[in-house]
Amino acid sequence: MADKDERYAFPWGFHLGDLCNDNETIPLYTGSNDGGFCLLYDKVSEKKVDNLLESLCLEMLSTMPYESLKVDLFDFGKKKFYNLSPLQYIHLFQTAYNPDLMQNLFEELESTIISRYEDLICCNRPTISEHNQMSKLKQTYHLVLINLANFPTEDIALRRIQNFVESACKAGVYIIAFGDLETEQSENKNVQTILEHFKKIRVTEGNFAITEEIFEFVELLEDHTFKSLDLDKSDLLQKALTNADLESLMDPDNIKLEENTKVK
Image (cartoon, rainbow, N blue to C red; front, side):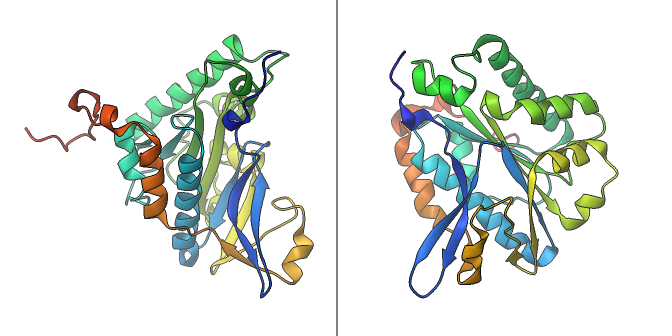
């Protein structure tokens, strides 16, 4: 059996923030082995949640080997993640911001999952994380951010969404869904499938409800205060860019611009 290269293992947990008191600071992670989680929040808390999500993505992109992780966002409306946006030009971040792009991105991710189950996942390599530690041909992990106000729509068959969330993690696709607290009352069965599959963090008036489902050692909250992740995003962006071969990537033939940004 080939030696494992643990640099290419998917991180064991998602960094959500820190537990702080006068004497110490303890990073708080929630396990990634169940494939992701949902963030549900009120309007007052939206900025805190956005900061957490962008910080988490940039921290992972800046510390994992270059091209081992790509962030995919299903969202339209106002732009949320300004510090992630420059990474689209080195193909580490993409946004599906209208229904057609969302359909195309979902089909692309769905196809990736199916092909990995057919061609790569086996008894000796039961997950893409195991595969990547043992194979010279690394597969890119996907961290998929889903704004539940926009996606999934009822146009996609329920069974496809069910298969997607149940199969994604082993195939190296991780999901963080987010939305207003009222999303829990949605009549959209596809949305409910996602909510039922993943553990949930509820955020009200800026306060994160850290349950035992999210963090095993909840007793630490008795004498620690939880501070959600809000890192220096400019610094993390620079680290992510430094990891890339910018000289090659900035070749005009390799640059892909957003629609409607190219000068005619």
